[in-house]
Structures are given as structure tokens and as C-alpha cells.
Length: 224
Image (cartoon, rainbow, N blue to C red; front, side, top):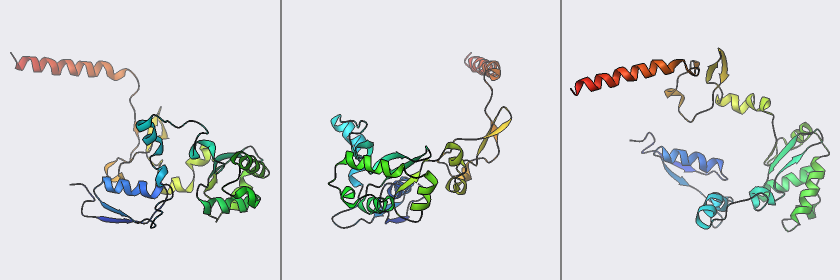
């Protein structure tokens, strides 16, 4: 019996993170009922499987700059800031895009969905390059714009969301020093908390081969 059997989950979420979460609940046995807007559904429903679906079914694998989420749209881009950092923009839906354009001061004509993508991309890049990453963070903070400053690795590992979820809490020992282990999708209840060290290369080989030889010898003696 799966752990969430006999559990019913109502999913009111949109975009990919919510449905992906409820997919995991369904895999654990839950009955998931997704609530979508009549006649419209989730705005990214067509995108959910487009890459693999088109690739395997029609041989149409996505390439750079040939589709909405591979760089062809100014709404889904990485733009450079004045201080050499980057702003990741994923404002695919109109409500996000309109907020984003308003906050950066993009002319209304360029925010229109019928505007030339290359012209819009150049205009947005010029606007974003006028300010530092932290200045943009302060401007869009509190607004639904679906964009973020691209963090460095050092910033990412101490991000409040990473810390609150304990993503890097588990440690392994490397040459006697604790190092964050790769996160794993296993409930903490089933995982150990103490730091463990991976064996160094080589020393266990002779021991294991010796044990195997003894085991095989014992097996052989039983057959005689």
C-alpha cells in the first residue's frame, strides 16, 4: 500500500511547480483533482510536455532560440545588469510580463504581444543594463514579475529558501572535512543525520576480494 492511498488532494495551483508537486503526491498514492479555469486551463498546459513530446513523437527536438522557452521570446531571457550580474526573466504570462514591463519603464507599444521580439529583446536588455542587480531586486520586490537576480553559487547555498528546507543539511566527510551532500528526494525519517565518509579509492579492494573468495569457496564446498 502506498503511503497516500485514500488521501484526496485538490490542486488549485497553476504553472509547473504546483502540478509537479501534486504529481509526486499522486505517485505516492493520492487521488489528485486539479481545478483549472473553464475553457482555459493552466496557462502552461501546452508547454508541460512539449519538448519530450515533440522530440519523441515527431523528431522535433528544441534548439537554442527556436521556441518560447529556448530563447526566441524576450519574455524568457537572461539579461545583463549594470554591475555585470544577470536578471533571469520568465514572465511568460501576460500578468507577469505587463508588471515587468511597467517596472522597467518599457514603452507600452513594446510590451504588446504583437511587437517584434528582437526589437523588444534589445529594448529590454538596454533597460536592464541601466541598473545594478540589487537595484532591480529592490524595484521588483513585492510584485508578481516572475524574474530574479541570478545568484552566485555562494549566494545560492545560503539562500533562505534553501536553508529553511534543509536542502544541504546532510553532510559527508571528504578528507576529514564536512561537505554538503547532494540533496535527495527521500523523507528525512528514512535518512541518517550523521556525517559519513565515502571510502577512499583502493584500500577496500583486497579485503572485498578476500571476502568474496571465502564466500565462493564456502559455496563450492557445499556442492561437494
